[in-house]
Image 1 (tube, rainbow, N blue to C red):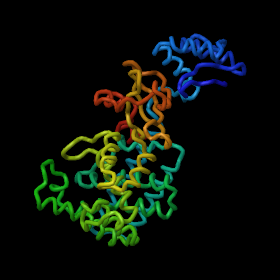
Image 2 (image 1 turned 180 degrees about the vertical axis):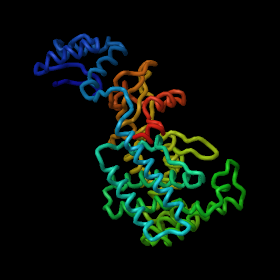
Image 3 (image 1 turned 180 degrees about the horizontal axis):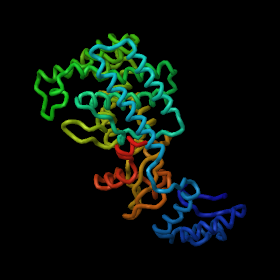
Image 4 (image 1 turned 45 degrees about the vertical axis):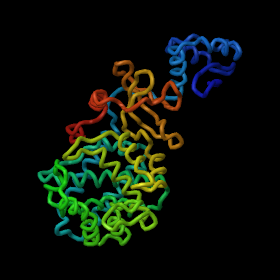
Amino acid sequence: MAYTFFDKDYLIYSDKNADLEKYKALCDLYNVRPLIELTEEEFKRLHVEITYEENKLISALYDKENSESKPLRKNKQLLLSMQRYFEWSKEYIRILQLISEPPTSLIDDIAQMLHGIIAEIKSKSKTILYLEHMITATVENPIFSYVAETSLKTAILAVHYGIQMKFTYHQILELGQSALMQNIGLLSIPKEVVLTEKKLEEFQKKLIMSVPIYSYKIAKQLKSPPNVCNVVLQSRESVDGSGYPLGLSDEQLHKFSKIISVCSCFTSIISDRSYRKKHNSFEAMATVLRQANKKFSQEVVQSFVRIVSMFPLGCIVEVNGDRFGIVVEIDQNAFRAPFVSIVKDNGKILNNQNVLKTKSELNKIVSVASQEVYKELTKTLIPTLEEIKQA
């Protein structure tokens, strides 16, 4: 259909080449009075008198033509991605449990896992990037699950960054391996220190600051490439020189360590900790942005927010008009305006989900969802651990 738009948002006029039957059907569907016979001048006069609710209906007509409608049910692809993530976490926990006396094949096992992660991220579906909803396997010793979760989510995010930045496959592998191993030194720290809910004592802080050194030693022990070992050692450094263990600054740091520090910060915030519950991905992105040019490279952060979005995949948000939904697609040219699948409208859970562009004022994202709505929609949309195990 051929339409003319004002402000790139509102449907205002249809020319004579339009599909009249389809247009009338849509008008009936949305209870919009037909504007097809109006001249542009007549419509301009009418436009002043149109109410907010009528504008909303007209915008909905445009969105219907540019959206994908799906039945409201848990996304099968998301379930499969969560199942793959869960299996990767079990595999990585197995690897971590062998670190004290590692067989030579462990580095091959890590590489094999990374090949699977890269293939998953390169696939048409991007549901593996709904990181705030991924569920990590658990074992009796919680330190293994803790390291697996922080490492695996960071690796997935770093690999995604490398793919979007068009790194070579070899570079992506090294970046992913560095991300998987940057927290592995936590296994050398007493779990009482790592998992404490209390403020760390000075000697405990020094232990935590030694994690990159332990990670570096383990990476060398596994015969990781020299690049990977160096990046692992630099993973807790900051561009302003305030990091550890060496206090290196911007120009002294490998570009992979700058990427991993950003990804690690993000994934830490969206993951549960012994002393706090996880935060949503919007809050994680806000934290990253606040540290740009201080702790993190400004260049990396700029690319990161463009690739991941201010409202990342899986983020549950509120859209103008008392509507709530989940971010399902990123627009790298508009990092504040991703595509959102509307799930709840004016207090009611919808039978069908419409995917909306959020560039227009009517469909603009207002904020992230409240904790109450977040819990409600997570229960509605996100597979449970039992469903993952049965997949």
